[in-house]
Image (cartoon, rainbow, N blue to C red):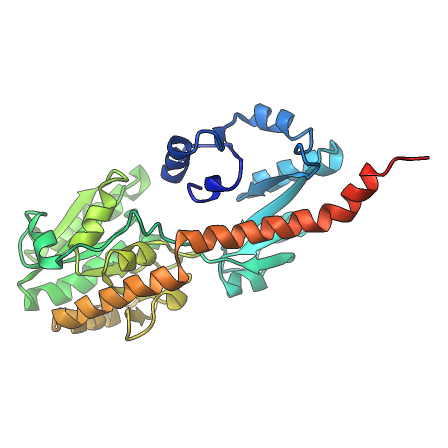
Length: 346
């Protein structure tokens, strides 16, 4: 959104995410937070140049509302939907997606599972925010945690995120490499507290409470610092629609070991910027992480190549340009109707 708001006027409806906060602060003339009713009232009229307003929606109820406004109440809007799901939709969501004017898929697989896919646009990382440190060892020292190097897992603590898979892999790997410490970041919802408690008990039973550290839910501004500190970033979810953490980690110079889900096999170049392992396999995860622990210089090189890969293929600027291209194609398809509407009737 901060990049998009440099070129487009954006009305934002919903909870203010970090990107929305940044866009509002940087471009208050181009970015406006709207209540739902205000957005609906605004959408009853076309843009000053005659184009229809675009509603970029992400969820089922947003698609349904947009369809009602466009088709029942005849609001001059066009609907664009972003699809990241890696599974076949049920009939209800499939019908909703079929009524979109355009669909942006985040991966080729996601695009093959829905109708109306106009383009594949990968998510991107904000390279100005996620930057590598001058030196990983020095950066780790600022953590005040044991060892010379860090291994990090970023995201919520829950079974689907594979926190237990990471813990099991670390219980296998860490005793062999005393210079490494593992960190786990992210919120733990009440329903997952028993799950976390079991992990804590397992770590205690192995005597590694000082080397597998739960950092809790970090503030947005703290997250890049921890990416910079760790040498190796792990992403071990059992399922992920796309998955942004490997991008952020690579942008900060981390070697990445990730499970084979979401877009991870597209993001991580096997053997070059990291490794892809079978989903749900702590043994293979431990093996590939250990290969990097044995050779920190190789891990550093992978991190440097990872930053380069994100810069070339997965920047947020590239994502914003892809989305803008879809918007333009939607407006372009409206041109004949706009010209006809502007022609005086005899």
